[in-house]
Image 1 (cartoon, rainbow, N blue to C red):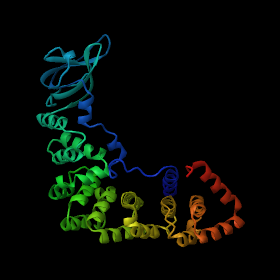
Image 2: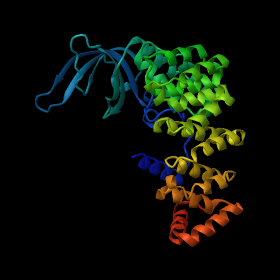
Image 3: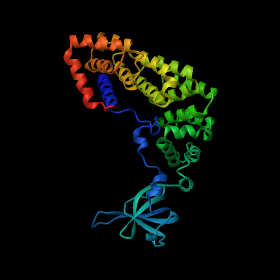
Image 4: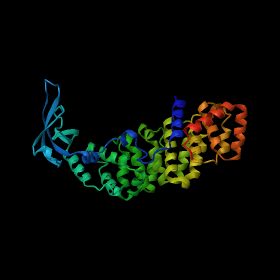
Length: 382
């Protein structure tokens, strides 16, 4: 299974470089969620009110629920000033179920048509009103506003503010650092109730705005043994924050984790992604540290292909001798690893690459021919 996952990851790397256009340490499923601000912009009318009279038409089995409008955050002539709007959905109102609701509506045939809706509270309404006034062009002001709501007691508000950060670029987050409060982030990170998928992002935010105290805080989280599940699952983001705040110690820990066969597959893969993030965003400034991390992976047959393909894609040929030294090892006989080393050699301009290829062509010409054909098919012409 480990080889399958590593093979899949390496294959993806051949075809595409990693994306860094949205927050790196959020999962794609979170990045894909539309925010309330986006829903507000797209809607013709946004109505806050209370739900009443849920029912089902026995003739058509269609559900309906009345929304008694308390406030129109955004209005449209199609509402016609009505104080009760019929939603085309059965929304049960049972017992202590909250009846306050926020409906986002489009129009169809001159009438309102609900496109999205959520149970709501006055806190959500106030938050949405504030976010609707933001200038999308001023990313720093926007993220400053949403930062204030990351720890909101209202779960809908806190979740939506987090999605705003998930959709923001790393560059925008860095430019907005002056609006972030390290104490707030430390509190969120230490709170066991904070959803695990948010820890990596909060750690990255702490990395762009914190100081020595925050570095010690993140270092202590990362060095726990055994690692709590929530830390293990967010290791890459925590590590990135630590590297930003304490580069020397952070990079040393990264290389140590990558070279430690006792570490879990997920922790090491997460650490690889952190290295890729810094290479993509810092480039030459962190090349020496990136090379040390790749060198730590080369002796491991389950991860060597990851490091070798990264080195090839980045045009880092400094470790060519170390890469070629892995070819004949019993731990590196998997076809994906052998192909990866040959692919690296075909791209590498160093003299030792020419000597290596000459030897492999003589011993296994079909392997070299197959890799050359693969490069022609999948590599974009320069």
